[in-house]
Amino acid sequence: MGGMHGFGPVAPETDEPVFHHRWEGRVHALNLSSPTRGNIDAGRHRIERLPPADYLRMSYYEKWLARVELLLLEGGFVTAQELTTGRADPAAPKSTPVRPASQVTSALTGPYSYVRESDAPAFAVGDRVRALNLNPTGHTRLPRYVRGRVGVIERLHGAHVWPDAHAHGLGEDPHHLYGVAFSARELWGPDAPVRDSVRLDLWEPYLERA
Amino acid sequence: MAHDHHDHDHGHDHEQEPPSDIALRVKALESLLVEKGLVDPAALDAIVDHYEHKVGPRNGARVVAKAWTDPAYRARLMDDATAAIAELDFTGRQGEHMVAVENGPGVHNLVVCTLCSCYPWPVLGLPPVWYKSAPYRSRAVIDPRGVLAEFGTELPEDVEVRVWDSTAEVRYLVIPVRPAGTDGLDEAALADLVTRDGMIGTTRL
Picture 1 (tube, rainbow over the protein chains, first blue to last red):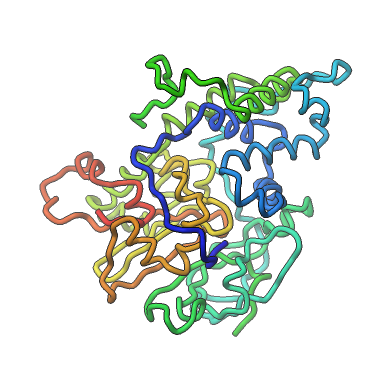
Picture 2: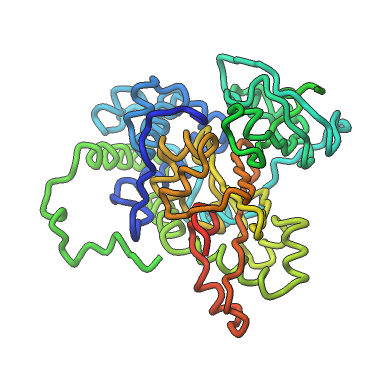
């Protein structure tokens, strides 16, 4: 939603609790421990597939609740009837939790890397690149507001798991990831402050030499 | 994390209200998944405890204070923030690849995630509601100075604003300018001056 107007002012809250209701913490934990966890890109895409009006209306943890319910349904871990009644089908087999309490700390704090081996990067620091005007119907991490705009490569992050493939179960398909700087005027026009900029991390398939 | 929201034996008014529909729906989902053996209820308790008590902006404040007082650490942090932050044992989910960006007299950095709500959990904890809200996500990139003004942060025109939109698994930590008159303070006292919003970039210290 970068660059959209009309959502009103930002409303910071004093002394905000981590969770505003007990159920929010449980929803957070259910997302991180249910058998549907593990593919962060598929999880983000599941939220993006909510109907747009629902997406805008629902709170963050309402979206997380919808996500875990829908992923459990789509993954065949629960049936619609079980979700409605809250009771397990007596005929359903009993599983073993994929994330027992004994493994929580290591799962949450253990180092992990999205960097993968790949060919040499196509671009170098200082190169001018244009973000392609791509409009995939699936998941992407190329925000609409940079499509078609020209920026400068500032940083090479190495090849990272590519969400556009990974979200759809098409493997990690790693591609080089770059920190790209766009001037505010390039993105927003001549009224933007001349020195301001927006920097994004963009994968090689999103870019062409400019 | 001084605000222990869940110790509810002290009786707020809302405690007297019946549970909301959504609270009942979550309870039903949790009991279903436990009954099916898909989740371990003790794991849920441990995850909630982790995010309520073990991570939070105090972690990031320690990183900032160390960078202010230890030039060699600051150099390592700017060169490879993931490794430098791991020296303090702040690692894990949503902090797998860290980059530190430094404010200065002529530069101010602001972090957002326009696509969802990416945020560096190991150093800042879970994000506040406003960070995840449509007003912040939509406007931080197109009108950062207007957003900053809503936090009471007025920047001179000649200060360059750099907005970092967290589009990948790289997470950004803003290193604020060390406040004037703090020469005599040690690392722990300096860390007490560092705020969450200062490390997101919506305020200056």
